[in-house]
Length: 510
Image (cartoon, rainbow, N blue to C red; front, top):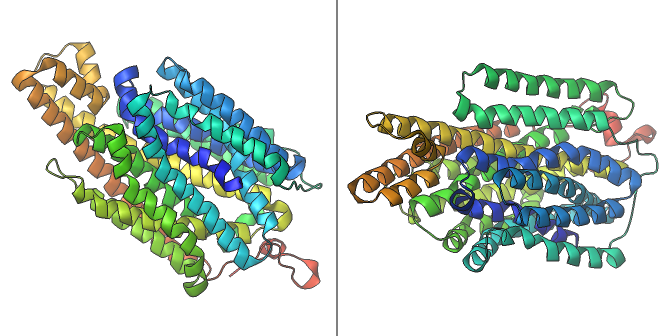
């Protein structure tokens, strides 16, 4: 039941990827606005996850979980009936509140229910596999809905799942809490949301204002300053939402970094792949959803097997191999040209799914195995926060590199012509806008514009995915150098009554 409820969080992300080209056509969203539609949810989600983890520990994990389901259903309904891009972005942000309450509660309840390390690894592998199923089902469900209904239906699909989860969780899910948990850290939450929001704004808006723009640079620095202030606040406040002592353990800190790098490549690639399949290869949303299955299906199949591989070769090698495979998949897809077909990208999608299926469960198990049982809520929240931050950065970085290259190429192509400002804005705003202008122009001019737009888009996609590949492979090397070989056990007592985390306050765990 916990895993089924988690589906709505993961289905929502991949459903949205399939609907992005439709939002370009129906709401005239630009590439930058598409990034905000995706990342508005993630900013709030990631920023509040740590507070939600504390609330789950303090108030009760079951109560927090049920509240999250209600809020997610309400936000999904608002998003479904949004009439403008701005309202949709706001609705997506509201959904992040519900998602933040759901995710850490599911993982912390699972960790509480399975105390044996082997059973916990298997349960977390199944949890991650369910996430993979959500990734797989999202594009197909979105395609089916778009074939029969309007784009808002892809958000309404969350409501019956949330209601079913609510009705079944009330009698079936056990409640647990930590009576000694500290009060929620609202100041830390505000600093984290502000810092992440400003940093992502500078990355996403850079193609519009220019990477050297004073506004972009100052906003980015402001975001980094807010995140620095967050770290200082968490160190000295009496009730931090992020326990910095956990980061003294390599089993925790290296795994947290690795999970962010894995989702950076995964979410960033899905953001551009669904547009490539529809805008460049001409598939319908349903056809595009089916064709993303090699990546999503590989995650669903491999994730439950990650625990088996961890037992055989250790956490270090499993995570490092997963990140390198993610990088290999991104690199293979980044070789696409205007002559490429769907078949040319399948191998890369499969590698991407295999790598993510190996890395994400292994890093999650390492994180959850290195925190005391009474802090599983905050541990799972930290894990989820870095997972979402990695995904948000992937969409922002890969999407912005794509947009920058696309706009540069199209600006050069349009330079010899006197194009009205409104039409020029539509062409430069997104490849979908350019193709719409090309269709209306028709004739030789329309054909030339369409070819130029597709070529510029693929060039930008290759740049973004190639950069993501380099980051993922570098992450694999770092994981190999920093992760401990074997996973820690949560709350394992040490001589003198201390736990692994207590010892981590004095020296790292190897």
